Every structure is written in C-alpha cells, then in structure tokens.
Image 1 (cartoon, rainbow, N blue to C red):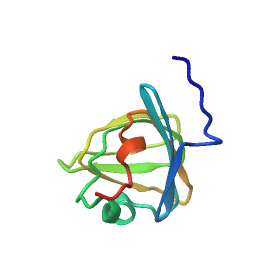
Image 2: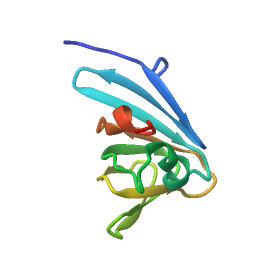
Image 3: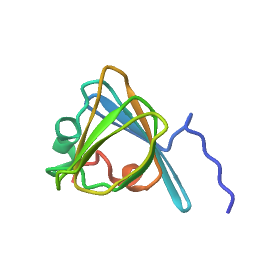
Image 4: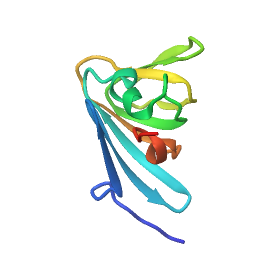
Length: 119
C-alpha cells in the first residue's frame, strides 16, 4: 500500500513541559518529531507523565538541530548534535544542552506510540 502523510498535518500532538511531540502513523511506520526547549530534561518534563524512573522507550533517530546529552541507567553517556543518527535503548535520561531548541526525528515507533503518555 502506498501512503503519504505530511508533518504539516500530524496525526497527533502531545505537549509536555518545555516540549512537544508530533506523530504520524502509517502502515509499518510510526514517525515522530520531538521538539525540546532549552531547560527540558526527561526526568523533569516527561517522567511525571510516564510514571517511570527513566525513559523506557527505544529510540532510533536523527538530530535536526540543537544538542541532547543522554545518560544510560548503566552509566554510559554521550552527547548528540545536528546530523547525528542514533540508537538509544530503554533506560536513560536526557536533557537539552545549551540555549538552542533541539529537534529530533524518531523512526523507532516507540516515541510515536508511547512517549509522554500516561500509564
């Protein structure tokens, strides 16, 4: 089946403190754009909604603009910036670095399906 959707008209939008997510749902693909403002941190902005200690969503993504710092529950950490393609498994915290908005494309589906939804 041939499908085309546009981010100009996402299927849904989820707002959370200092950010939001826009998602499109298609056969075989759930795609999300996450926009995170300076001062956003998962453990402060999304954890109260998710009801978990750390982010339990798997991310396959691409950073369009801005920077994110990611810390895994096992202690591993790194920083993502424009042009980076990444895989981040469940069990992490993340926050915006600096004073620029961070925009991330997520292809894994978990972000479009479960991110920032109450349990």
